[in-house]
Length: 525
Ligand code: HEM
Image 1: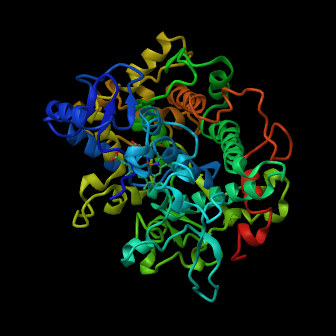
Image 2: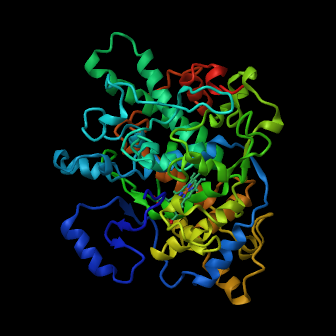
């Protein structure tokens, strides 16, 4: 079963941190018989004796998932772009590599965070395990065909590739390096957009590029544009722009400071278990998905159903044509001067505000989405995403919000710590009334990092700042720096596929990928 997150964390210098009590012995076994797992690290101090008890985490988890709260100005597509990026960062490429052909250096790289689009490319068309993701020419990525539904014919190029294997369930499975990108339909269609982007870049390469270099040239172009878009469009929407530009212009102060740029980066658990889980708060309960599943009928539950990892495609072998995304409802193309691609405001989906409230379906995730057993009761706290996040932090003794604020300040980062009153009251966020006095005191003193960074955003109009923004910006900076293709290591590089040489946004990526055509961006009309 594919899991969205890691179950155990191999933290450099600490070994394997798992939920079981017998951690020490497992550590020794893992070290002796296996190459290291995905390489996590700890940016700040340990939160020893600062973790909240289970009853407290359960209450906070429940309170955070009752729903409610406001909308943001961020187009909802960015939520799932964020999920796609998370999977790219945390993708363990060894799952698609053949052990005996891989050098130790490649193995290390494969188990390290990067923004190289490994989740799209796998180990490349020459790798025997990854060749299946590619068309016969070894240059294009495969796309799938939808199944006719509601009078809409089957359409080639609008589903992920599927159909391998000998059982219905295996045939349904997406043939992509990272099946987590088929966990819900919104992230699946985002993955498909990236496949199209690569394929269009291949198609538009100058004929002067020799055959043997066409794939590598296309991949580098795709990856650098993707990084530029993340740096200038995605990060500045979710974080206070000043925090992002400070890190990208003046360098890191807290994470792998002074690392040789090409050294293999690690993934700080403060990012993975707390700060970047900010995206969970952006998820909506329902979407005006397309012309057919309109007016909120594109519910999150159905987006799970019409995927093959979180659901079963509604029992069909391929995506039904009636579920093809309408990208005009997920991104604002007016930003690129394409008013003809605008939908009425009432049809447009905005992400939920980044705050301490999560949409209600996240109180009871489909067990398939995290590898749980189908028999888990709806009310089982392990199905509650907020409880899972808080519990994961306890498992690794993650630093609290206050500890990270002190740590970052000591490293010279300018930020203002949240007061107890701010943490308690927030700004139209979760209410902590269900906690006993003692539980509340414990949480205000030792605030779980994830909760802390969400309160920071909530008190800042829904944009990350302070501790959260710094952790996110530094981790992205390092992941881009250490990527094989890197706009950080190549500061003179400029985008060539957008409107000018400084602009390349997600809408530009989509316009390029879908040839600027309404019939491709919104084929249902
Ligand atoms: C419907 C959408 C989503 C669902 C159902 C979902 C669900 C989950 C689940 C079940 C986990 C594992 C929890 C655990 O046991 O530790 C997880 C981890 C995580 N999620 Fe999400 N998530 C979604 C969207 C997002 C978004 C939009 C972001 C960021 C922008 C995000 C960031 C993360 C991160 C960073 C992790 C930890 C990854 C790791 O440890 O490898 N998720 N998510």
